[in-house]
Amino acid sequence: DTAVSQTPKYLVTQMGNDKSIKCEQNLGHDTMYWYKQDSKKFLKIMFSYNNKELIINETVPNRFSPKSPDKAHLNLHINSLELGDSAVYFCASSQGRGSYNEQFFGPGTRLTVL
Amino acid sequence: KNEVEQSPQNLTAQEGEFITINCSYSVGISALHWLQQHPGGGIVSLFMLSSGKKKHGRLIATINIQEKHSSLHITASHPRDSAVYICAVASNTGKLIFGQGTTLQVKP
Image (tube, rainbow over all chains, first blue to last red; front, side):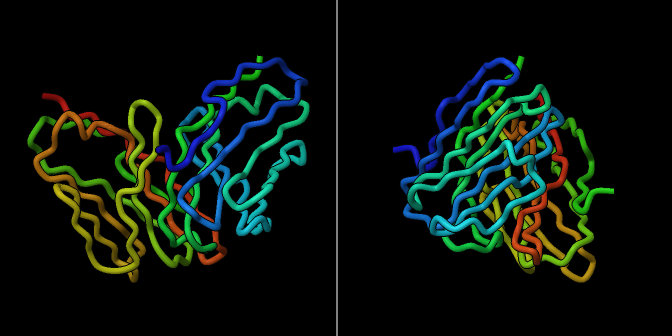
């Protein structure tokens, strides 16, 4: 069984569209994260949720809206997609809200905006 | 300047060589992570440490909190070790801050 899964794996879309990426973890963890990896492979935190509560919200355009329906799921909705949103988006989870806890990463979603 | 700096950025080694990747940081931290990103893109956690040294198989990670420095060593390197190695610090603000990664290629 996959511990942290993301769908879709690849997403190609036009500028201006709205899209969602889904993440699910079956590890029983209470904290989930979204990271963005740019073309230079540099990773940066976007959001973190602990027990469905938003605890980290980095300087991310408000076109990005995370939603956590329960502690096993953290989805990322992106409105009005722009060329600069093209990147690989990783979901991760950990037990405990501190970033000193081991994190388990999903396989990533490669988003290409045309 | 990034808050987390890794060196070297790129490293090519011959199979069997001893490899060291360095990580320096400038922020207060509660722990430091070493991650491995496979050529296929998946990321796995190798180590999480807050002091001293940890060993797992041929991998060794050390940290010096006073000097704000960590090293990842690979002994008897193998082509399957080829990957991007990423240092990430758990900052006192509660978020992970990543280095830019070190791309390692081990040639047979």
